Length: 299
Image (cartoon, rainbow, N blue to C red):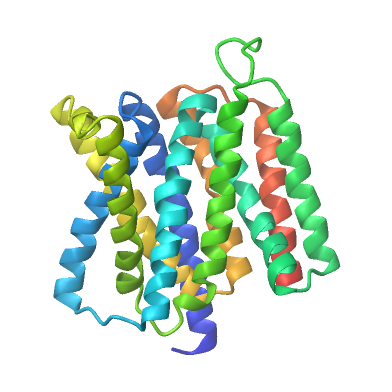
């Protein structure tokens, strides 16, 4: 595939992933409140595994070398098992708007970790974008929680969970940066989902058995909607994100896929009834703009 065409494909896939995640997260928030975070995470990965397994049977499966298998497994444990569970906890504590916008920390964190561990140079624009994003997020987090009453205190455990999730996603991007080269996205995503399911199954058995999975189907409608959210967010979203990571530059695909907090604002307002203030909109846009500034420096 020509370089320009591959870059365009990666960027389009990253944008589509951001929009799909915004829709699926809103569905999880509305219809998954009664399901424990680890159980909801386990179910969405099971749905993804079934879809990926069927796709692999149709398209064929070619396993990479052992080192890459280990890298995919590690990224699945960090990003899908730990990161997504923390993110679901954050959604329930501080709402989908705040939890999503805090994920804008992932690109700056990835840049700082790469700079610290791998001595990757950060230019003037990248440092500027990092400061803009973290400043906007600090302002947003420090402001009062958006809700029926502005006097509601902010749940800092939810903020910590969201920040932890962002750190996990940053680590995942770093691990996948080279691992996906020469490997098809179906295989790579399948190798990420399998170890995540194993760990989440152990957690579910230790805490509540399979009760949490039963709660997914508390009603038929609830089960169908959460299944749709899992198909969209975990299966399609992961494939699109992996496609972006494979064909576009790491900074570019991370920046574009991190725009989903912007798309989630109108969805959260109209579907979930969350209040959206002009201040939260402005700070969300500022945080995403900081990522765009980093992207300019990376180009």
